[in-house]
Length: 344
Ligand code: UD1
Image (cartoon, rainbow, N blue to C red; front, top):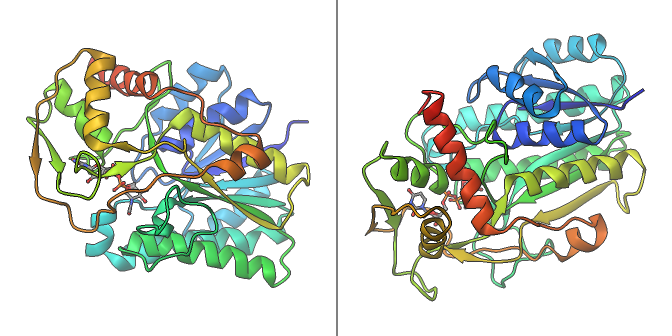
């Protein structure tokens, strides 16, 4: 029998790509999602890509009894990948309680129920946001955790601590914390991708919507940073590459290969690209000219951050493979597909 994996937030951006990769690697996936930032039609798209329809239940991870019943309905779930969370930095400043409740209580509910239902492990979606502005670049997993710039960032730090404390208390659970850098791009089939609600806050969806004419102009937030071209630098990681890291993490937990009961890995390319370099790369890859202007800095932005992915490369045997050109092209193809489908 195939190993059963529960994917929370499985109809979301990173979740949906991960479901496809899990299925490709022989796992049986059960998705739960409250559909607060995604649509149930994503399940159809996943089926189109993989040929396998994952089980789907509309469920909020805040619903403890609902989760308990889910584990009873789908017996034998071996591990969880926990994506479901609120993730907009700006919104988290306005609605901190929403962020603390959603992100912390969801994780606590899962951790609480795992031993009862013999779930062995959990892969947690963490973020490079835990490093703040690192003192040294590229940033390694051992870099100090800096005071969070936003409630969102704080939830990622606290969630990491919750996992560590619960496991240290003797809970029969293993965990891998994946610290993502900036995930971008879409599946090469253009059947799944990033679909933000309303006006996008993140760079790539805003950029592709501008290229499509949905938005008039992309604002580049600042060109007076202490970087070669003055714009911020990020480590943009292809979402399918990122999804593959989760499959390896699940294999590792279930094959009992971990060196520690909690392991943490940077999931990035190891290459920093500035916002302006990214815009140039997009124009070169797609042949589409982008209307953008330089505006003032955005509050709370980190100047520059990119990963040292050496530990993930060596210990997990995982490596980012896709080029930035192909990745940007995939984001553009996804945007074109959305128009074709009359969505955006
Ligand atoms: C932020 C979070 C990250 C989180 C991610 C998802 C921090 C430090 N980072 O990443 O943890 O996972 O959001 O929501 O909290 N930019 C523009 N114009 C735009 C949009 C963005 O110039 O219209 C610039 C930003 O100033 C930044 C870069 O593009 O320099 C990337 O921004 P964005 O895509 O929002 O991601 P982060 O802020 O890096």
